[in-house]
Amino acid sequence: MFKKILIANRGEIALRILRACKELNIKTVAIHSEADESAIHVKMADESICVGPASAQLSYLNIPAIVTAATLTNADAIHPGYGFLSESKRFAEIIEEHKIKFIGPTSKHIGIMGDKIKARRIMRDNGVPIVPGLHDVNDINQVNKFIDEIGLPIIIKAASGGGGKGMRIVKKNNELKNALGSAKIEAKKSFNNDILYIEKFISTPKHIEIQILADAHGNVLTLGERDCSIQRKHQKLIEECPSLCLEENERQEISELCRKAMMSIGYEGVGTLEFLYDNKKFYFMEMNTRLQVEHPITEMVTQIDLVKEQIFAALGEKITKKQDDILLKGHAIECRINAEHPETFIPSPGNIKQYYQPGGLGIRVDSSIYQGCSVPPYYDSLIAKLITYADNREDCIKKMKRALEEYIIVGVDTNIQLHQKIIQSDEFITGNYYINYMSRFD
Image (cartoon, rainbow, N blue to C red):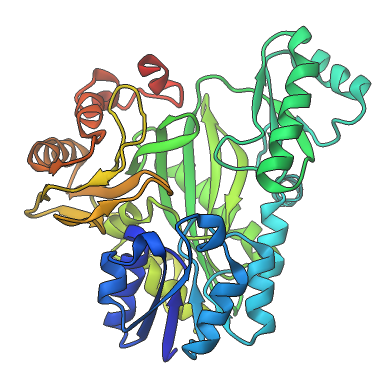
């Protein structure tokens, strides 16, 4: 077992990792910026070390400072959480060079699957359906030919993209040139890579993702799917597991394709393959080579601790379960609680004056805020994840309604009211919602 893990993150995910480490009797090192000196994960860790000023670029993205912190504290592994450096091939490479274990896939796999063009080719070669697309957009004649074949609208994407950056929807031919130019500039600025590709734009699909778990011995499990269709500007808001729209044979078919694809490249650790689902057909979009924000709902229905499984995989241990052992029991929903105005979506940093979180059977809150703490303006606005679990979806929604009513956060604006509207809407209750659902609130 690792003796000491440095947690290269902040907020609720840093606390989530810390708790898993404590249960495994692993010492922890919390890094923090100057703005996070009083953060709860810093207070709870065995050791803490400041890696820079408030700016994420100078702290949580500061690779030399993080590696130095790991060296000074004799950490033998680093867990990157999600976001920040979790999908940085270079970060993983540097950690590997320093003989420190990166708790995640190898730098090779991060590089392969982080390039969305390469990832699409791997999936296609393994029989996984992909969205019709064109990988070379430098030849405008080829682009126009592609558009003539599949029709408009199309979507432009950055090969190294994520979070909607470098993404443009083209609905008319005269929009193409400007869209390609602006997407290229944004992709270069956001990812230092201006390579683009285009796909047929599917306007009203579901967003379905498959959770996988793999070890270094060629064993790969799929742990069901999550429906992440409630999202605003490509940022997820509500996720549920399992999806209401899938039949069991569809679940098994796409899961097996994903499992075989991951076996073909020798993937290790956890990962998520994301799909658009439209008219009973799956279309692969991308893979996230890390722990997902929404991992708790999979944990609830499978009773598998994904953070601990990441640690075991990094240690080189074999997965003890077989695919037939994986059972999806009950239903789970997650609402992301953000410090932002529920109507304007403007971020709302500040001090938490009052805080009371809901409880009871089937209620889980993953959060790092507490009464008297500060929500800094420098980072993502996510401050908590409210998860409910029940034997069936109807009861799970009832628990979520009750939990949202109980949740008290005073001092900053939150989107709790927005979540209350969504989960009581006819579309959500019936499951007939799609990725364009949130457009009504813009």
